[in-house]
Each structure stands twice: as structure tokens, then as C-alpha cells.
Image (cartoon, rainbow, N blue to C red):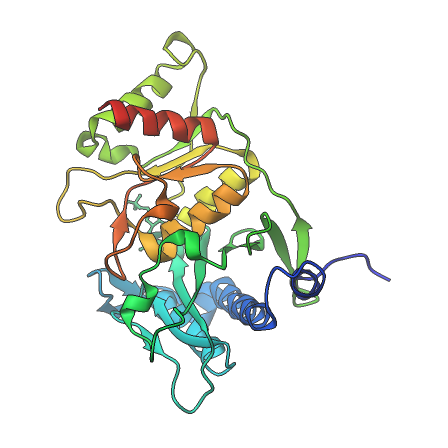
Length: 335
Ligand code: AHM
Ligand code: MG
């Protein structure tokens, strides 16, 4: 008998033995994982599946959509709408919320996702991924409105991502630490490959898009400048840099070996609050990082405590190894 633990078994144990998640949430997560599996297949086919390149449309943020952005969005909607566990969904690729059609039973959860993060990497065969966050519909709410989604990240009941790289890996938290599952393509199932993931508190690796340096605010400049000075500078050690331009892949590296990731606010218009979206990028990633012992702020405050004002709100992000995130945050406090 194999001693491998499948995602299904992990979730059953979280429900039955640990009492961490109700049955409906377990089902929801199984469905999200199934959708990720099918997105992974589409991504893998690449040019053979005719899925590369741009579609002739823009999303609500005015970005040109890639064919795979749209496919991934549809896969997630179709997989999740009929199961009875959801009330509504929201996505980076959709202007407003998607209500579960009346012909299906309504559940009590809200699912938010970036169906395919790292869009600029799709056509060049570099890692991309799906990010998701699960909230509970507020109890007093009749029907579902956009307002119901505007909950701080500390209200999430599950969060995760699936990275489509050399391996397809699903990373999940339900508030009981972080677990990683690798897709076994022969069996067609996600298998637990790491539990109790921990981000080291210190690091010598940072991730930021250096081409934006001239737009950064002073505290970010100071932090990066000190890293670049290496052993001879105030930090007394040499730093390495990585920037994949897929948040999923950058965060995956940080969960695996530590590091600090930043997409800060900068002086360009119109993205005054940063580039990344609070509800379906920053919040789920922040919870994962915190569950692994790291930290995540917008430079000033804990991201998970921010009260969202809009569905597609953007936010500055500084996350990863705790001591580095605290340092960047202190520099902002002094500035
Ligand atoms: P996307 O959701 O449209 O793909 O944009 C988000 C991505 C992140 O994955 C990544 O960290 C960032 O954009 C990269 O931005 P840039 O191209 O400015 O380096
Ligand atoms: Mg994204």
C-alpha cells in the first residue's frame, strides 16, 4: 500500500480529525484543485493546443487578455458554479462579481481568484499560476453583492495558489500552516510533498522589478540601495536578486528558501497604490506567507488587516522573510 497522502485525504483529515474545515469547504477546495489540474493541462499543451497569444479583449484593468487568461477563468467558473458550496465568485478577469446561477443550489462561500497570474510569461514558457482566496458570505447578507467581498484578508477561511512550472504544485492554507501538493500526472492527483512549510526569518535574496527604481519612494530606494552595497555596506552581506515577474513563482521560491518580494507603490500614474490586487493576489499570498512564519505589509501596515474599498483595489506589497519585511516597514515608519 502506498503511504502517499493525496490532497483529498489531507482535506478529509483537516475536516474529520482536526475539525478545521467544514465539509462544504473541503468540497470547494477539491473543486478548485480539479480546475487547477485542467488549467495545468491547457498550459502544458501550449502551442499544440492553440492556446497561446492574445485574445481580442481587455479586462477591467485595461490589460489585453491572453487566450489562456480567458480559458483559465472559464474553467474556474464552470467547475465551481454547480457544486452548491458557493454563493458567488470574483476574478481579476471579470469586471463585477459572478453570482451562482439560480438553477444551482447556493452555498455560503465566496471564491476570489486571479485565474492565471503572470500573464506576461504565458507565451514564453515561464512559470505562471492560479491564485485563490475563500471568504464566508456575511451572515446578515440577503442575496450577494460586491460589498460582501470587501472583507479584510484576516477573514479568509482558505487561500492558496497553483504554480504551473517544471512541476505543477498546489500550495494551500486553511489556517493550519502551509502544505504543498505536487501533481502526479500518471495518477491524476495532487500528492502531499511538504507540510508545515517555514520561511526562514533572514535572507540574502530580494525580488523587485529594478526597472522601476526611478519611480520608487525613498524607503524602498534606501532598502534596495543598502542590499546592493553588499558586504561593504551597512548590511554586511552580499545579496542576490531574482525577479520572475510571476508573483506565484516568486512567492513559491520564498516559501521554499526564503527571500523578500516587493511590488511597492511608486510615483507613476495611475497605479498609485501599487500594481498587485489586494483581494485575490496580496491577501491570499500574505496569509500563506504568515502561516509559514513570514510577514507581509504594504510598507506600513499588515496587509491582512486592510479594509478593502473596492473589488479590484491595488496595494503595495512587501512580503517574505520576517526580519527583512520588518526592516522595510521600519524604513517607511521613519520616512
Ligand atoms: P497579472 O496578474 O496581470 O499577471 O500581473 C501580476 C504580475 C505578478 O505576477 C508579477 O509579480 C507582476 O505582475 C510583474 O509585473 P512587472 O511586469 O511590472 O514586473
Ligand atoms: Mg495577477
